[in-house]
Amino acid sequence: MKNTSRQTEDDALAFVPLKKISTRPAIAKTSNLKTLAQLYGVCSKTMKRKIDAIKDKLGDRTGKRLYDIWEVEIIFSSYGTPTIEISH
Image (cartoon, rainbow, N blue to C red; front, top):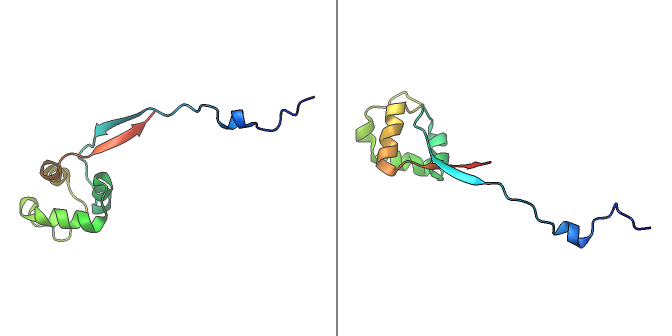
């Protein structure tokens, strides 16, 4: 009688279907620095430098922690709209 509770080498190498991954452009919404950095795949220090380079377009940000939708749209137009991967 064969012991079926053990996994054989063939079972270990069995095909596991991969999830389907698609991409879509990110939507401009109110975001903080960390969220924007994650969208672009950089650290927040790098994102801060990129945003400082276009601060004349964004205007005075004294006391503001979040970037408004219109500011995020300016960032997207300056550096390109990032894409988000979606797995199904």
